[in-house]
Image 1 (cartoon, one colour):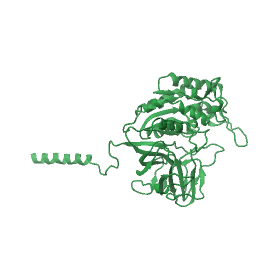
Image 2 (spheres, one colour; image 1 turned 30 degrees about the vertical axis):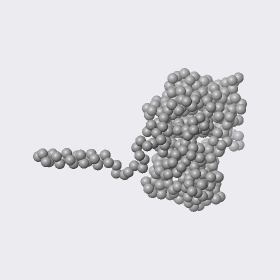
Image 3 (cartoon, one colour; image 1 turned 60 degrees about the horizontal axis):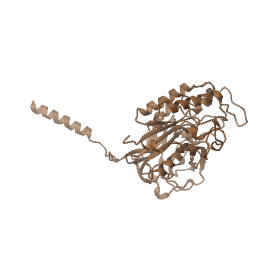
Image 4 (cartoon, helix red, strand yellow; image 1 turned 90 degrees about the vertical axis):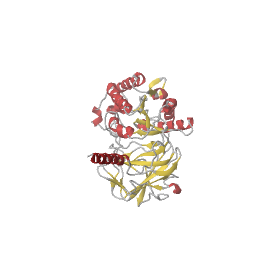
Length: 431
């Protein structure tokens, strides 16, 4: 009987030992660092608004996209997304390389991406996919080219419309590993690309900026990286050589907190665009002006005809509604140990969708952001860009012409209003 009990005990210990032993060797040594989002964008379905060009369909074509990570590292991996696809996304080949001029890459830096050791992948509808890590020395702010080959007819169901750099679409063929893409068509959008992550020491962390077009960078010249999140990253790097804090831009032009339209609403996309980012320590929220303004918008067709009876005409929100939505964002971030900073809503008198009622709402929301105590800190973008003689309007040199979106100078004033010392108090340690 004793022998049987001893055998049973030995068998149990053996099972425990087997369960505790990994079947595959880890590629990353525990405690040596963690993955941190170095660049990211908020993906969405193609925007359904009149006057915008249709989102392209690819077939037997390569798409090369250029991004600018704000921290560096020596190992990277890439996240693709089929979040809004209704069929599988079939990527036959994917490469990453340092970007050169235009569609060209630095040839010696080219690396094929694999997925579970395989060169191709089928991404299920609604899902993201991470590549295997590759060894590639990436310095902060070096432009990176990510290329994918789509052999089958593929609708661009998951995009980011307002890219900060041209993307290049090839003629027929797989050009993912080629040093250049001749005769490429250019588009100012990213397709199926969501995130570039670097393996970094534990003190390194990410700051996510969640917002609408004013975070996305509308009003600044594309390709200049003069949106406020990129300028903030530049400030961090200059203030602290070898900055250990990335800034990733999760703005979508036209986005709202409480209603869909340009992308799903912020409460819906929060988990994907904030919580799913690796290594997040800080969140800066600048959103709500579209919730206020969209019900008053009068969009026009190219011939000047004003569109009427649009769905968002009836999607009126109050200041209390917006405060509730912002509280939800704060509480959900705090549950995951992320510090949240509120940015005040910038002026908009003179914009097409301005109203006196909306201005009163903006002032009420800003008063709560400043004094409500919900946030871990406040960055007063409103005070940074408003006209002291007319506080409901931008200073003239800080607006881009539509009285809603900042100019490059306005974006710089916003980035300069961020207290770097507060951001640098946060560091992810293994998240």
